[in-house]
Image 1: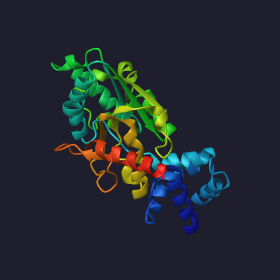
Image 2: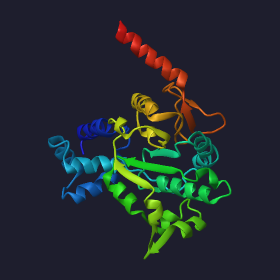
Image 3: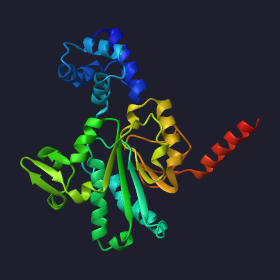
Image 4: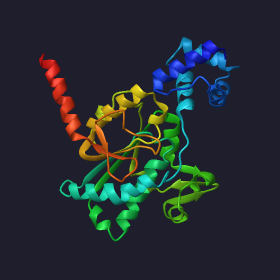
Length: 291
């Protein structure tokens, strides 16, 4: 692949997915895209880029974006967000929604499904605990989205290798919520029924999804440049209930990017809508339109 081809590929990926591929990451492109080259019967990365230039929305172009944006994940990744979910978010929101008895949760970068299924298990565990009465009669919807339709197909099936279930998943939960199928493990039908999967590019309009009480948007903003991070966060703000929560990854923050959210004190990675800042932004827009 020539330097010109690589520059085009970098621009194309940024435009289509927001991914910022550094100039020194040619090795990453080679390792992730050679399987796409072989799948489509091509001979080189240069041929791949030529095909994308000719038909930027073709199946081969879609496969290229998905190959570069598919990221590794595992069950109960980082643990702390799930502790916040159990100890802070669910208690506060179930109390606040005592009348409607409904919660909506969005996993905005679900990959192969470990995060939404981890949340489903956490809900089941809480419902079975001494504090589980707070969830009685609640309808809890989990929407899981990702750019890659291929990994979402895996997520819907809920089938994982021995290696995958050993990463972060307590043995008691494995035995309780999974069934062994040959050399793989499948999530129970009960858990799978709790999660709806949908293909979605965070660069596109997501207002039709409606409002959510909790949004998990972890370990995806790190791949965007500064303006794209700000844009995504500002578009997320109206999608979250005024007393809802945004959960980011350990290496992500809203600080210096937007005033639409504020950190929840002493809760790393957890943010709440900054209503004062959002109201000020709305007033500013109204005033500009009136001029």
